[in-house]
Image (tube, rainbow, N blue to C red):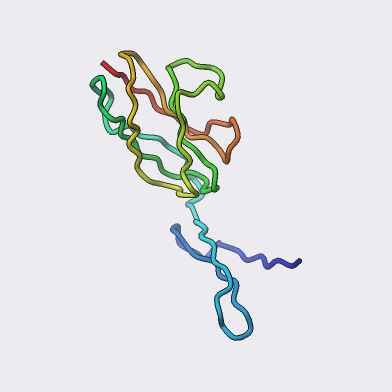
Length: 131
C-alpha cells in the first residue's frame, strides 16, 4: 500500500483529475478532485422564494466539499432532527450544481440543507414557501 501527496497551492480553483498510470503509460484509475478558494463557504440557493403547490422545487448549491455522499435534504422549517427529512438526494461528489425536486408538498414553509458526506452535519441551508 502506498500513497503520493502533493500540494495544491499553485493550482487555480476548479476541477482536476488524478490518474494512476502504470510504467507503460496506461491509465489504471482516475478520480476527480476540486480545489476551492480558501474563503469559499458552502451555499444553497433557491430558484425562487415561493413555489406553487405541486411545482418542482428548483435549487442550486456551490462550494460543497465534493465528497461522494454529500447530500441535499428537504425538511419542514424548524425541524431540529437531521434524520427527519422529507427526502434527500446525494450530490455524487459535485461541489456545485442544480437540482429539481419533484415534491408534492402541502402549503407551508420548508428548508433544504446541504449535508456533509452521509453524516447528519448540515453545512448550509435555505428556506422557501409552498402555497
